[in-house]
Length: 220
Image: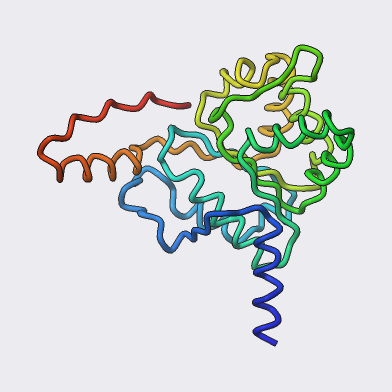
């Protein structure tokens, strides 16, 4: 029975689209002392998913947002829930591919279906569109509007929320996206250093000829 359960969970994980598997057991809490550990561990109970609440994680790159979302994705897979995990740019690219081959509505329904939808890295990666196509903001608003109040969406952003309009291609619809998301969301802003930059500095420091690394810009 345990082997059967493990096989089912493994299938759920593969179907989720999650490529990097992380748990909070490997999270370096000491490196992010401003992050409320109790709040994050409460998220791992997935009670917010049962309440159909959303989640918005903000902070500069490397502060652990993706780690937390990947851990939540794995936890939801352990419950054998329908889960989808994708970077924002990959989700939008999938919907644009649907416009090209006539499968847009089918693809949109597929993204709407999961109990938990995880959209990682809003602001990272270039969104592509032609002038005759709807903006990413339009697609994201349609998706979140259909899921609002009956299914949970967890999102991370590397850019300020005020910059979503420029990134998504429509300031008005981006504001509507945030209205849908923030109105019923647990919000966590990770105001701390970049762990990836920390590791890079450690590696560079071990080489006598290494040039100093540039600082990262602050995010929201």
